[in-house]
Image (tube, rainbow, N blue to C red; front, side):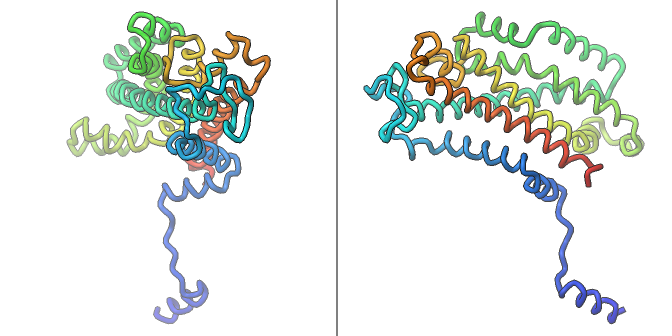
Length: 298
């Protein structure tokens, strides 16, 4: 036995390597995927810009610089708009707003949609029928129209924007989680937990939910992209983020209304490009996560 072990050590160069954890294996798969790596790089750059923009731009988004309608220069790297606000500063703060709204709303959507979907999928029957009829009622209203209605009745504020996008976002995730939970509720490991007399809460949280994390993570990544688009759309229409807070949507609509973009199209191109890159990066990352988390790809 000792000779065999010694031979194995010699063949491996005396190194004993442990198998990577599931999370580390997924991370390694993502880094090996050029599309996923590029998407992560774009998102990381946007996060860094949103957090540390004062290091590269000395201007405030609240006050005009006094330099009106300037093109890109050494003083203003991306120029200024017709109000004299530095475009780079507005882009950076707009990134902060978009990412905060996207992640914050998705957290609320996960909480509400997760509870509804898990309860409907685990209990089935009457509970499932009641919760899914509520979900169907929400699906009867177009998301953007319902969000506009909520903003119009409650007022234009960042808090109400969170409420509007959360109300319109949870039904889709609830239906996804419910479908996944229904497919697992009668599996052997769930039946074994019931046979042991474990309470439903423990079965749902410790046995059912962990097996749903992969589709939830993928769906949440793509959902954040949709939330960012919805926020930009509402701000473009003038009922989303209100001044002095900038939004990529309002940065696009302002120059279009004043015709300022004809002389300086970059004031529209930069926020539109930032919005497009963010949404594409999140969607590509979601697709890459789906491949990395798929057991059949291992």
